[in-house]
Image (cartoon, rainbow, N blue to C red; front, side):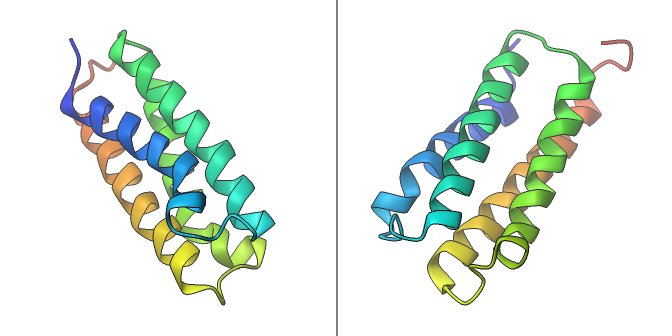
Length: 109
């Protein structure tokens, strides 16, 4: 069964991939590649979750959410407000959705 968290994380993953161009920071290499790579993984995990993937995938999504929150400072683009806020807000949402999904997932999965 597809959960609303999976659909939401799929949309957030696609947003991460497209947001450097939509928000105008594609020329910032670290923010660009962070969004593309993390966005692809978030989207793929969401698609896998839709097919009833194992519980560890939810924990990977949580880790990616935490990474997104920290990435502006770890990758050195925290002085740019638009990519920083994008990464932090999407990271918080991805992490919250992953935690919510772990609460609905059977522990034996």
